[in-house]
Image (cartoon, rainbow, N blue to C red):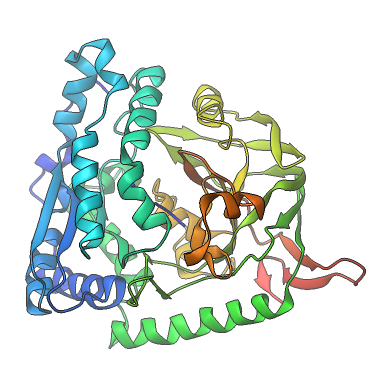
Amino acid sequence: MPQDAAPHAPASAANAALDPVFLDRLAELAVRTGLNLQPGQDLVMTTPLGALPLARAIARAAYRAGAGLVMPMINDSEMTLARFDHAAPESFDTAPGWLYEGMARAFEGGAARLALVGEDPMLLAEQDTAKVGRANRANATAYRPALAAIAGFHINWSIISCPTPDWAARMFPDMAPDAALARLAEAIARTARLDQPDPVAAWAAHNAALAQRCAMLNAARFDMLHFRAPGTDLRVGLADGHFWQGGASTARNGVSCNPNIPTEEVFTTPHAARVEGHVRATKPLSHQGSLLEEIEMRFEGGRAVSARAARGQDVLSQMLATDAGAARLGEVALVPHSSPVSQTGYLYYNTLFDENAASHIAMGQCYASCFEGGESLSKEQIAAQGGNDSLIHVDWMIGSDKMDVDGLREGQPPVALMRGGEWG
């Protein structure tokens, strides 16, 4: 579950446009299902410049739903690149804490949070990885006041993607800009269930199915999950008092929302000290502007004691060295191989999509909401129950049509949960 090159002529300069009907349907889904925005509730929305058409449609939908104030914050890729080309070296250890403190105050006041994603996922691929790592670490540290409201599920929040020319060009480099954008929009429509007559009703049915799956797992009270596939033999202990979630969930403010659209996962918190074995990635990971391929890790006592990547080794090593919790797990998620995202057959270079194509694990921060009574647990209590703490939360995909998953309870025979990547 996800959380927040040299100068070039970006694909966003291309003369490509999105269907207004598509934008309006996606905007309504974001407001009504993703956020379930309440009358009078303010909305803090972040968006890349290329996603402004969707951001504007969302603002209209939000105000029609009775929003108080919609506050957009816009990021521009050319300004991001300007920093890496011209900023003083010491600037990469700084971040706008004042901005995130303001966001935290907005959330404390009851505002909802929506993140639009759609920027070129490989924008920083040619930049100095040390600078990228320093900037991301500084940003993660400064973001913590705002992230606390999200990770603790104090507010209704959601992440949704917008097809943009830059992202479409990355996914379909051999296609004309208009055709590439249309192809990406078609994929997003399918995975967001916009191809259904009533997408909101389709999501209600999907959420009900995910809730039923979570209820089964919560009743089973497994101590551990055992993943087996080519290159993988991994036992993931589950945190004490862990709680499975998936689809729509109710935030502490009482509002039920879908934090991720699309979503096909059910997920919970591993025990940070009870992970053993080895695991191999089944899909590349796009992280900090780099593509990490063929990741392999070995865990002992919950910690990744070795980590290799055929491509992106420096980025992987920097990620795991972020802090003491970065080399431990904060999430484990089960996704069927037949998920709509998987069936498109695309690599999206975007964790929001790629994590919903395969079962996955996440390095770093756990979610307080994935504990029974998590809303009342202190940070110390979560740690005592096995929850991990870190500045990062990075999902990477390990599932495939060759993956078997068993649920284990001490003194009892294994329970088959997945066979060949599908629910048993």
